[in-house]
Image (cartoon, rainbow, N blue to C red; front, top):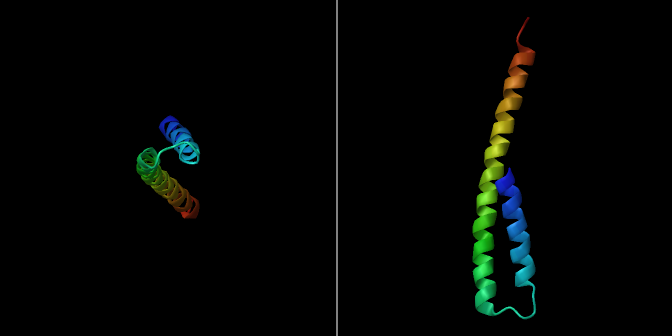
Amino acid sequence: MKNFAKNLETLEKLTADIKRDDISLEDALKDFETGIKLARGMEAEIDRIEGKIQMLMNLSLIHISEPT
């Protein structure tokens, strides 16, 4: 999760850099590409975590519905 927070911080910095008036088009494009790669990686991590949560919730439902 530390890695996710660090990536989010980097993504926010890249976003701020792209919005600067004095950034060259080349640098803005480079930052944009880096940001897209980071965002895709973060999305994959979120999907992985959501899958894990869903699995745990399903296990909980199985245990609740089992007769005692």
